[in-house]
Length: 479
Ligand code: BG6
Image (cartoon, rainbow, N blue to C red):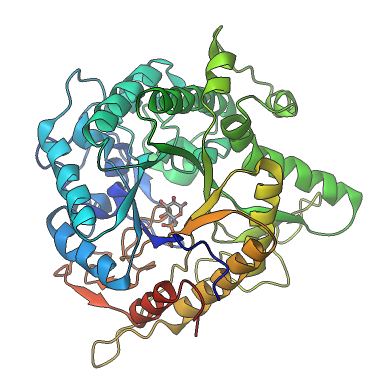
């Protein structure tokens, strides 16, 4: 008998910039993702200031969900999805982010997507900002470093809340908001790359800008949550954290302290603000470490207090270790590398696979906040191989997901209040970190390759039927 809620939200997750394509269709403007080229596991992506006609930008066509949404949503429904997590491409609605009136064509597209979900009995879960910052705001304000973005973001929120108030109930303000605590986040998340052109790992790190940008995102998120609560009481508002749990590499007290500091800065800093409605006591020590001052305006503290989220969501792919020994062997990772854990295997991209870390994380997060949780990303990016008959037998993906779902169920038995689970990239899409198509996560294979070729046809992988059975049995049958 399933221990999961009867109304457990099984589904899948994607982001507009990684799968919609149609990057300049029907009035859409260019986002920061539209300025990123393809990279690989070994070679980072590049950001360009202008869109170079001779360069391949993977978001421009992606898997063209824009013209395949009916077919794709029907496939999700066939698997039994109860929920579909996607994002709204900010630049479809406000092409530069600064217009006064929204772009009607952009609004119509999401009407069609949400209506199609409804037709299939699927509840949308919408990320308002998922690496889709209008590039014009990067160019003019250095992204979220500019306080002006708070107002632009609120215009965008007001437009989409009002338009979709009867179609969308679950909203997440910023995807992986804690990306901004790491140098990597400067490109896709805080957009603090005004005037920068080059490889993403060469962006000069400016912690002062990142943490200032984060403050503006916290205020914007809180204002959006408060506005939603005041005007649309039916809405449920969540945050979204890239949770990379970290263990001390050894029981040396130096490693314990190192790990505690790392956990605070990377995993807890943002959610402490978004869930508790105030900065944690240790915030000043982080700013002191970087020698920075975060500018706040009178009234900001009050706004943060009033904009606490209703539920906490996170992505979980891997774990890391922290060590005071700077020579400890490093791992690769989702947004940030850490010390290598000798007990864990890793994916082809070096992400350490740790299903028990998910149970541990769920317990740690729930102990801290005691609000409902949802795992809104999890999955294995892997090279899929087509057999001679065209089938894709992705047993490795099934194993990965099975082990994580088992641990998720374990956490529910431990007492965690878990609302749902939406594995990442339920249909193959462009990788956020590398821009590749070859790093596939989907239950559905898409004929699209790194060189931009492919007829975009869709095909069910072996994991498709497996996940369908998992959903049908509410997680009881994971075989
Ligand atoms: C998360 C992001 O970091 O991880 C997604 O929210 C991203 O946008 C996912 O795609 C997986 O990362 P990657 O780099 O394998 O695409």
